[in-house]
Image (tube, rainbow, N blue to C red):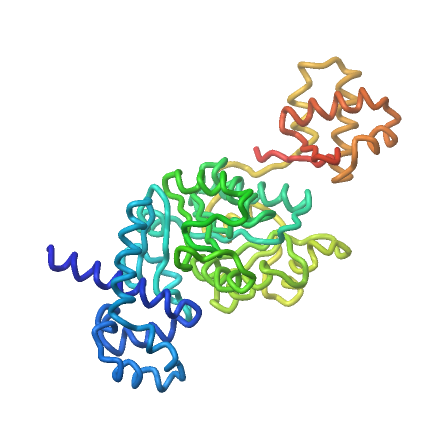
Length: 394
């Protein structure tokens, strides 16, 4: 058993070293592993053997990096990671995501940080990617949250995967945590760095929650760079059996990830939006091109993803408001409150001042009623006093 554990550790070290060298061209590293009978064996070969093996791929320039010193550096790196609560899982090792292995360009390994083992994170629930624009609109934020809440009520609880970016990504991560679903953040930096910094608190919450993890194939010390995100996106698409695009412009990282998912023969869904809304143009385009299925009903979405709604998924916003306040207000006050709620629902993003003008109400009265609705979670009000309904599943 001791010898077997040593062999597994050597192989992990070898894959870690090769991942650092061939991160952007993992197929070349994988070919060396196959050719020499193991990742550790690659580093035991004479330089002339390495050069000869790389000639066919046209990647001879990497030969000088494949040294025993690189292997030893990887061993020191992994030892340091373990001391900091991080780890590395190599391709072919227990805990490496099964679906990712099926892709044409899977990374040679993944760095991870979390309370659970890679096997516990990736070995159970179906993985669903929820992705989209950083410039999330109130419509996108509302429906991103509703989609996650609907999935949390499914008979099959999925793992929510996204990229820790602002906008759709962080909304999906936080909605998953709040709904009791596990979530994985695939990062475009090293495991020792969080980008963007404003999401550090959420990242720490993910790492500290059972069944969740921070994941990357970038070595420690890697900082955020534009080129890193496409490599990150292929992991998000590759890990998951389905990808949901919430909002995206015609061009963007979300569109790239959705198209990658389609190329991996995975299910792709998109949230339709208004034709004239630039934030939804990417989603609408994928639907028109038959690359993505439109999301029209949350219950149907849950079923298409292999689950079954445990309860009816209803979003009768005004009925919920009336039920909440019917016994707490007199009829006259309730009628005004319902008018405010209906206005917010029908005109997403309307400001408090605009509600005043729309309903001919004093500002103080309008502010009082919108604050009541906000405190009880029926609407959200941003820093510019724009209001949006927060429909509740029931």
